[in-house]
Amino acid sequence: MHSYSAECPFKSLSDIKGKKITVMGLGLNGGGEASVRFFARYGAEVTVTDMKTAEQLAATIDRLNNDPSLKNARIRYVLGHHDIADFENADCVIKNPGVKIEGNKFLAAARAIESDISIFLRFSPAPVIAVTGSKGKSSTVSAIHFGLREAGWNAFLGGNITVSPLTFFEETSAETPVVLELSSWQLADLRGRGVLKPKVCVLTKIVPDHQNWYGNMESYVADKKLIYADQTENCYTVCAADEDWGRLFASETGGTVAWYSKAEPSDCDSCCSGSARAWIGSDGKGYVSMGGNTYAAVKDTIVPGAHMKQNMLNAALAIALFSESCSGKSAAFLEKAAEIFGRFPGIAHRLEFFCKYSCASTEFRFYNDSAATVPEAVAEAVSAFETEPVLLCGGTDKNLEFAPLAAVAHKARARYILAGSGSDKLIPLLREKGVDFCGPFESLDALLAALKADLPSFAKKAAESGLASVPVVFSPGATSFGMFANEFDRGNQFKTKVCGLFV
Image (cartoon, rainbow, N blue to C red):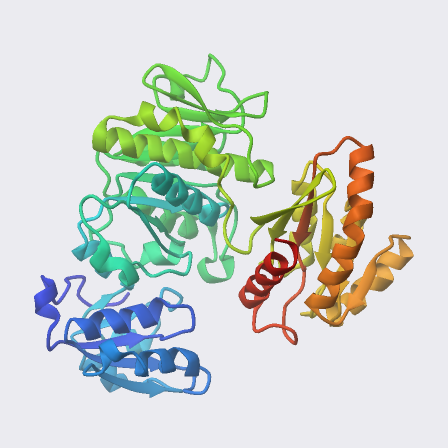
């Protein structure tokens, strides 16, 4: 085991000035960069070390070097390798959650180790709503954040959703709830520190994950349990009533337990008696029961899929519990929850609703699912809609089998395919199954132009079938290299081009 001190080397923000901080892992997604900015702002001497080269990290380094607010900051870079002296001589090392402490000689040399999450939790007075689990974390925290903002809270969202909470640290106060998505690795970095005591924590579905890291489910789940390790009875722990893991978590937490489930509770479900809880009714609506009253908190949604409805329902329960703990006004929120979540657009690049376009008497609803980089994700996307969608897919292969996509392609109303090595594997499978398609198109512009030309015929057929709306989903099932920088650039370009062409 590591022997570093769990004691933070600075007790206040003013203590940071002059301290030697080593940020281990600059990265490309903001966590390391946010830590560099934070410690530089408060006057630390910051050493940034990463196994990636300056060329690989050029975009992040350029942002730091060209930021006027960091003009007088003391920042040095050690890239392409680590120097043990940068760890031995640092007052504190800020580590990336993807780096294991055990067996790491550099971290073994550190006097103190923190993370961007632990630093935020030590020094921000903001009340926290935390979410962990294996499935549905990002959707749940996004729905909680959306619901809080729409209900009038000045809320912030960060953590594993690729936004470091240090980016909004100075904007937080005791009146600004912060929603944190926490991975098992981020939770492991908080072990023994006593800094995480969420007002409400939600544990989403648990399934085997990261077993190449943990080796067994027990170790993986042990890190998940840290989310409620320091909760007391004035906090809430939201658990799955119809899963064994959920019942285990409920038996261990010091917080007050609330429940969620996929179906209406039975009269004999005594473990949940008297607790706040949420469930999906036989009518497809999501209900929350609190304080002796039951509310239909999720009804008609624009984001498809039963799993998304469950995530929104869990978000409604979490916000109601938070509202009750802060102001005793859970009923006020629950009375307007259905209207709020009826406008929730989803999360960026994951079945994200962003635009609608009317053609004749039919409304076409556009969804950006660019984060679907594997064929299985497209299969899930197509199946999520109650109405057959128009599917836009294809891209670059990453040595995957496209049979799962081909197997459900016939469920789409029509198929438009972007050119790419992945599409070259998909097209023969579609032809074997007798599934027609348009393309492959050499650009997104060409694909969208062809789609727009075909919309009148889709509108006519929809009207004949009595359909008022038709979903159009961009779910590539492949990577984006060649046409786009990455899946996020691909999704952003798709949204920009669609809005320019159809709105």
